[in-house]
Length: 427
Image (cartoon, rainbow, N blue to C red; front, side, top):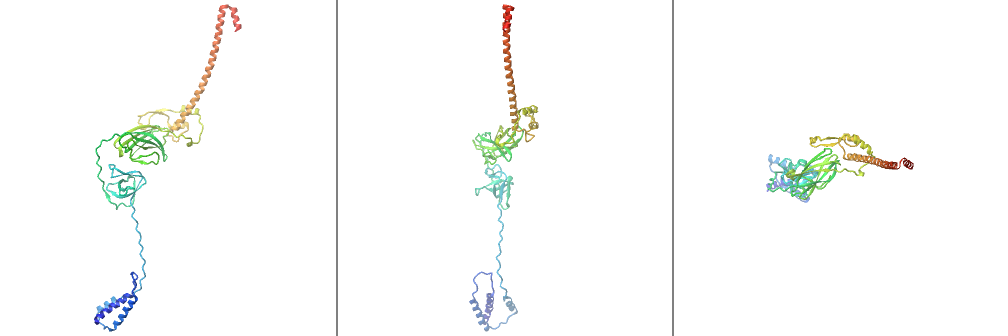
């Protein structure tokens, strides 16, 4: 019995020591003080009845090791602050030019979406084919397309995105290619960023849809050229047009031909090619036409008005060298007649570029010369009329004098010298 009590005593002592410790880190109810006092009293009653046990060195060492040392009550530690980590940025592609987004990497695939310049597009996958990424089509959750990155600037980390392989290429169905026919007409003139553009309207007159175009244009007055091609048409004229992907049969769209430095009053030759597939593919047709560009002449656009002497302009025309020549680019295939821009601008004091003759200035010199010639013609006509009137008077007087002489001769012949003398007196 004593041995069992002796075994319990260390346990009670250890329990009292644990109750005396303060553990602020542990959450929960505080230790009941009444229970603590009961344990202390119980230990005091049992201690006198116990006989000391013969302790071995090992037991003494164990008691000394297990006895809790008095320690300061630890102060409550502050709750560690959680530093938020940066949210991974969503990969974005931003375009500098309008680009077709297709069902696969290449023009053989269908166009699923036309991505506009400046538009931010979410990249959802990488492509196993270089220079392509897969984006989510805006406004169509779950729908995606393959975007050519030629005109795209990508931001964000794409290394964690999945890699997609191209889908099978569409198998073209052998069908009869419908005839492609169209006409072109001049719709407007646009001035965009200081450059002039001839707005050409394309009218689809055939059964096939027009998907792409190209053009070559040349100003026949100064030999300035412009060219271009594309798969997107303009839905309206001007510098901020709506985009139109194709021209359906009986439909129409616009192409801005240019830019030109200044073509007012000039003749521009346009060669337009239209095709039934993107990138000038499948069946194509070509139309060529010359367009006369009107010159803006609204008074509200002008200032510094100065009278012009038409006679002085006509004298300038008389001294202006005019020769026959051909443009170097034409390699002698086309001949022209006219003055050199340097001579024209020097004689008449006009022109903003010594290499060009402005159509406005050419027309002005011609009109002033015509006025001078008209004035000269009117003056000469007046002189001729005056001379004709004087001539008529002289002729009438001559006829009167001739008649008198004839009568005198007849009288002299019939009546002799006396009658002749009488006629002279009468006359």
